[in-house]
Length: 197
Ligand code: HEC
Image 1: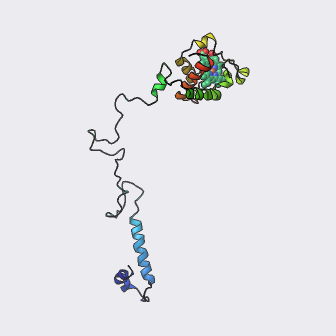
Image 2: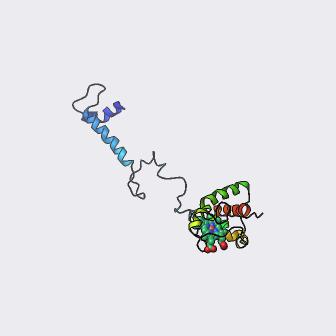
């Protein structure tokens, strides 16, 4: 490397360095070459004008192999990479919202999770056993007993709807309890607090 370098630029170097040394001029020329390579290997901020490319060496990261979501695509008839979902596609969790029956199986685990959620979101008003005697209820409005005739008559979907939208003095819980969790609570209330099958 040093020999090649001396052959090409050594002629301008003065004073001539001793064997094996680089003259200041050589160092400057070397530095210029390196900084040139460094500069042209950087792109500009605008991704559409990538600056200069050292074409045969480092283009791999400039041109990704995969298709960009918004790029043109000759594979599809409509020439678009990002395709719309197939007609009739349903959101993975949409069935949780519109279901008339509880879509979750009543397993031990679901009941445990339902109990846990009930402890977090409902117990302060409805009480441990669902009698409507929670600590908050004493200072607020006592909710109905879950075993009262009117609440026993509610279907799973009715209870789900009450949790979602609230009712009368009961605030809506859609923001705190997601649909999956609501169905778990419904299972817990019906089998543990109402004693239904
Ligand atoms: C801030 C206190 C409070 C919290 C928290 C609360 N409730 Fe209520 N709930 C009430 C009150 C008050 C009523 C009576 C509403 C009315 O009829 O005006 C009620 C009524 C109900 C009813 C009966 C609805 C009907 O049609 O009579 C159900 C079922 C119910 N709540 C379930 C729940 C569940 C499940 C949770 C937890 C996710 C919960 N509640 C959290 C206060 C609360």
